[in-house]
Image (cartoon, rainbow, N blue to C red; front, top):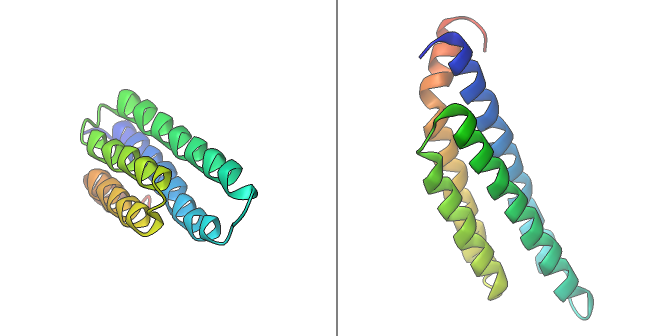
Length: 118
């Protein structure tokens, strides 16, 4: 892979990873919401996760990283787990999505490190 591709892949992967970490933090906040506000919070949170899926699809199209489809599947499954109120399972899936993202961009990170860019 050339340097331009490595930068693009690393950058897109870092964006997705950051979004997934933030989503995991929001899962903890969602657990604290009860009562009439809960349904609205769940709806908003699922919208955030769908936005992340859109970013994953965009990154996949821009970089050609087809391995991001596994990350997308984990986020899709996490949305379902949120829907059925299994927050711990959703968090586990988001953790797997983070790990999958890191694995996907690892070769780009190594190349950038060897070039002295990170």
